[in-house]
Amino acid sequence: MAEMPFIPFTRPDIDPATIAAVGEVLASGWITTGPKSQAFEARLSELFGGRPVRAFANGTSTMEVALRVAGIGPGDEVITTALTWVATANVVCAVGARPVFVDVDPRTRNLDLDAVEAAITPRTRALIPVYLAGLPVDMDRLYSIARQHRLRVIEDAAQAIDSRWRGARIGAIGDLVSFSFHANKNLTSVEGGCLVLNSPEEALRAERLRLQGVIRSGSDGMDMEEPGGKFNLSDVHAAVGLGQLARLDAITRRRAELAARYFDVAARAGLADLGIELPPAAEPDTALTNWHMFQVVLPVERIEGARAAVMQALRAQGIGTGVHYPALHLFKFYRDQGWREGMLPHTERIGRAILTLPLFTTMADTDPERVVSALARAVMELKP
Ligand SMILES: *Cc1c(COP(=O)(O)O)cnc(C)c1O
Figure 1 (tube, rainbow, N blue to C red):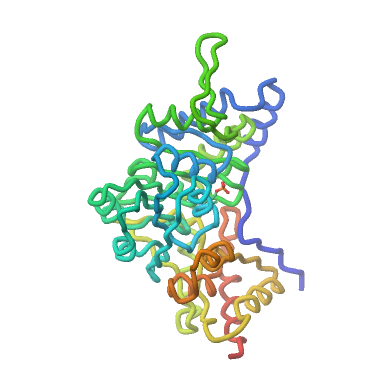
Figure 2: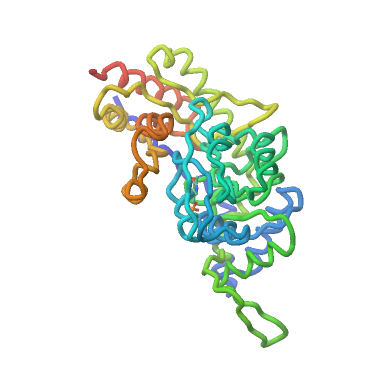
């Protein structure tokens, strides 16, 4: 029998027109931040209902600048989740503030908003919700908590381009909203990101912090009031982003179709009976995910090394998987600050057992079935 082709857990989907557009930028004589980057910002602003948008080199610098725009600094506490990429909390440390981790809701795998409320102290200045796999948190409740306690919200929407809350696109609503266009995200500019802001004043500050803090005036005037980073997006990257943005509807639709197939084959294969937890299904009236990832939680609680064994078994069948994410508060840096096992039980359990299955637009319609049957077999073979 012919070898089955390898299915990675994700794969970028760049169309020929976009590849041609990159060649045009390279040949144009202007390759770093310029007209393409501005056009990308303008298109993103349209997508987010006309709100000010600034493009960045990546989705980490957007978050750092967002925290600075919000005035977060030394002595401040920022409440967030530990079931996320390290970047979410790294940027809090980068501005001199302290991340305060609270547990996740085991169903949504996003911030538990009861836990958020309970963690608020007089030092709390901001909340960072993370939309894991693209699923928004309960935005009504999140913003009601923020208003009540006068907190800024910096949404880590790195994974949530084209996700919706009550029909509104994430980014079109909310306070400061940050997206990533990393190669693995639904919409990529290879590396890149954007920040959605509230006013022209905030946007101007973000623009300055994006490029060394430099303020230009007239033909030759230059000043600097506060040092910034080097976070601008090149026109080569922006050309890739523009090409992807033109296809965003199709990208989101295809991912939803593949997720629906996963649910269908998972039900037929009886994954739930094997103790495998599926992601929450789409809730179009409230939280609608963009299906950035399709993640299962494995029944590996009492079996040492079981997730690694499942990953290896799938790899042997030509199926790539990923781990997003191990519980962040158990990394050495946070342990050294007193974070311990048992403090965030749901985050810890999910962090040990979560597995990202392949999901990308160019997957074959039959791939979810192949993945699910291989997964079911691998889990059945686990020995306690
Ligand atoms: C990708 C990602 C980031 C960081 O984005 P980069 O573009 O890689 O800097 C931050 N938070 C989350 C949740 C992400 O998935």
